[in-house]
Length: 265
Ligand SMILES: C[S@@+](CC[C@H](N)C(=O)[O-])C[C@H]1O[C@@H](n2cnc3c(N)ncnc32)[C@H](O)[C@@H]1O
Ligand SMILES: [Zn+2]
Image 1 (tube, rainbow, N blue to C red):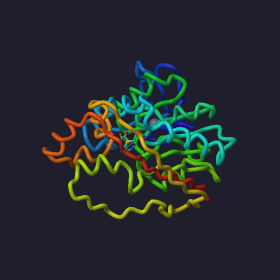
Image 2 (image 1 turned 120 degrees about the horizontal axis):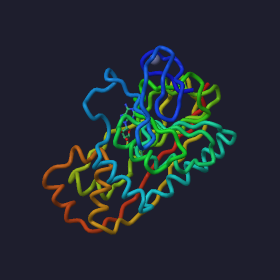
Image 3 (image 1 turned 90 degrees about the vertical axis):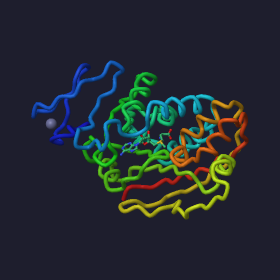
Image 4 (image 1 turned 90 degrees about the horizontal axis):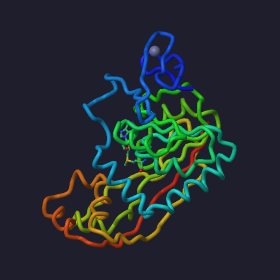
């Protein structure tokens, strides 16, 4: 089901390298992932999340603060794609959420960040981890029963292409009240932009949408910083707010997460 990102012909995979009949070849890295991101698809030298962001997210997720999200994801996938044989997580980061779907035999994680994929491959050996871009997924059409986008981007046309007919797309978005306490520290006067949290997607039917709310208590200064690094606020924070947050030892906050389940028409 994996195709060459250059000529779109099937890739023949062996343990050391993957190649197509046109002679394009991609090495399997020591950690086990394969880089299928072409130079043309890279818009910067190191696209996607940086090593610091990847490590921060991992430390935070490992502490279990977002466990309810992983558990709800698993419940929804079991309900809406009970017979799934193949799942793809796009923008998979370091693999936390895909690790909740270990009951699905074929698991693929794709991220544009080499650092994220390298970390995932080092931790979860029984999943295929690829560096690639969501806008040109290196898979033949109709490859997957289920596709996830967890706090990542939605490329509906491309997702519809790689999903089987009636395949399930689970889209997870941050809700309006997500991380209100953190946002109150960062933005003294908070003006929220309106966001469509149940978007209509061409080629898909929305089957189910639910909002998950839960409180969590961050106990260490380092974890407060990790939480900040996981959010887009890290790019926008002022110097004064960064200083205030650097002196924040504990934080009680609430997560508000929207889980949308779509069926490919
Ligand atoms: C907010 S993070 C979410 C990571 C993970 N899904 C999670 O929730 O822990 C967004 C991820 O999307 C990746 N990303 C950004 N642009 C991408 C693209 N064009 N194709 C694939 N992944 C991309 C980033 O590298 C990052 O790992
Ligand atoms: Zn090729």
